[in-house]
Image (tube, rainbow, N blue to C red; front, top):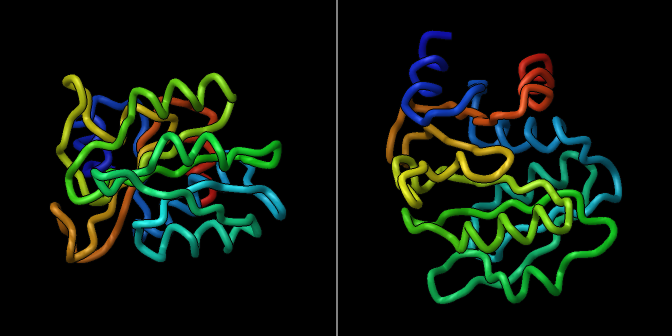
Length: 172
């Protein structure tokens, strides 16, 4: 709990739930927003397999969108992939570089789709003085041995939504 409080303070987010890995953070986040069988979750093609594994583990269908020149989710292709079954979008800030977060978040709000920021590879990076992973509805961090900040293993979920946090807290 002490570590969660420190993360909350550092990233200026209301709620933090630590879990066993970045993969379990993604799955817990998806479950917290009600992702279930036959829902669709869009993510990007340049990614780690754990994102797709978490989607499939929830029974949902992964939809893979192209990336742009920054190796991040292409907003142009993302717009083409959204259907009535789209429950969430997981964008990954790749290799420490910020995705088109402002535009993608605006698009998600307009479409009433949850935005999950997989910030496992950009811990500490900011967009307009806000930490990546705190701009969308849910942020994911990983503390795996190959990440910027490591505890050997582990991950966490960041959110300002009390309902999402309460679910994550009980589910983990």
